[in-house]
Image (cartoon, rainbow, N blue to C red; front, side):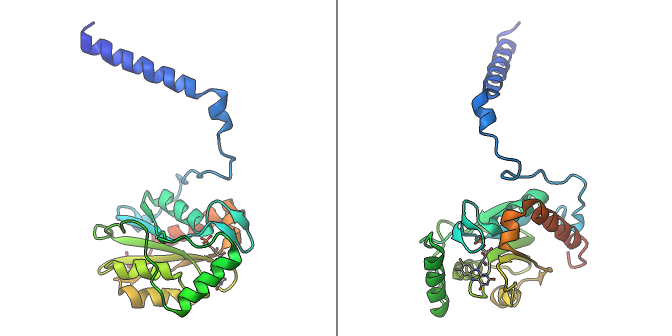
Length: 228
Ligand SMILES: Cc1cc2nc3c(=O)[nH]c(=O)nc-3n(C[C@H](O)[C@H](O)[C@H](O)COP(=O)(O)O)c2cc1C
């Protein structure tokens, strides 16, 4: 056996041993509960014309204490964003404010109310990715005071959406998507806007299987849209 072959065999053996070691009880115990992890993207789904497009899922979502869900680790909108990205094999970007909102729900609503009253543009943390290579941008956000969170305004005004299709999706707790799609069009002047998804945050958070099925159905419908 020559030296190179021996080295590859040795590497394979080391990898195999490492994998075997990883199958121990510690790893097994770290497995997430069935509903807590990422569900497999359904193989039988056909996302039609969305296939082959370069897609970015950009979203804002706040964890911590919120209405109807208590203290959560993953925001309601984030659950939908991850499902969309998984289904479509899309890139994903979380819009994060430089200054996080308070963890307390009431305090967060107070800060958000003040920002909206001032028409503020809170700074976004880190580099905003270059969207120029994308055809379709899925834009996810919670409804705050009947509107987009002001940090989402910052993001939308930073980017050029010329020639792009935007697909809004939001979670809310009763007031619905309101006129946010119109606001998005005014701010970005995109090539087009596809029918949005709106869902109660409590459903996204607490009925994950149903929520994911709703996302999948919506995406299937979008895949047939003539404007794509
Ligand atoms: C600051 C703030 C303002 C909110 N305003 C509204 C509102 O005007 N209408 C509504 O239906 N829900 C409102 N909600 C509830 C959120 O829209 C809802 O819980 C959403 O699912 C949160 O998504 P997230 O976990 O992705 O941030 C508000 C929540 C917060 C924290």
